[in-house]
Length: 250
Image (cartoon, rainbow, N blue to C red; front, side):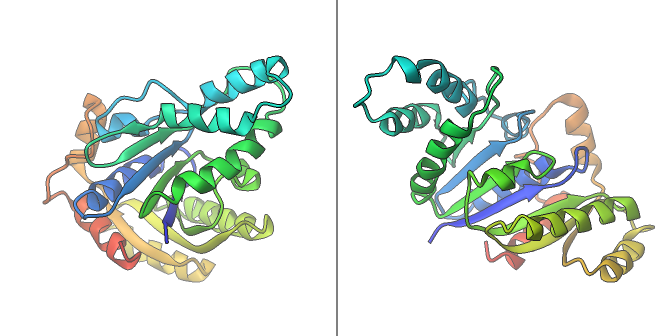
């Protein structure tokens, strides 16, 4: 059975960094892993230290432009699927798929419906799928990826940030998504606000799975545009994400 984990949260909370550190943990195992960058900003390849110049958004654009020119008896889903596999970046330790965003305007329901079934088949080839989601919840309503085992909502240590996490949790339930478990990860935590974060989480009824400390090594690499994937073992953030991974059974 494939385990699917999605990481979401508002912009600036560090969800891509958490995604990268989970990938760092997983690729030390024997598991076959797929990383999906579902954020249109496409920052995951940079933090992983790789490149991806092909996106599913490009393929969506192609299908929208060409579908009326295709013979009526041709299997459009098979064409779409073959092109998606062409965008799959096969790297030594994991595979990477970048969703991107189509450039054109209009409704992409047609290709989103095709994509849903293709992604079901694609993810079955992996032990674990890790998704770096875009901010907001539109992607959940589209249900491009179904049956998410664990949703990690990344937040900062502020009460406002925790309330945002609470709202995301509420909306996931309201949308009747196929999310089995919702966890909150507090990121950029300091000794000064650690106790208050735990107290606020309890007051709001949030399931806090981890408190990732502020890590100067991450800040330094972000400023330099360097990958986070090869952070050293003694990184405070790496150590805490390892604990989170253990709680998720990874």
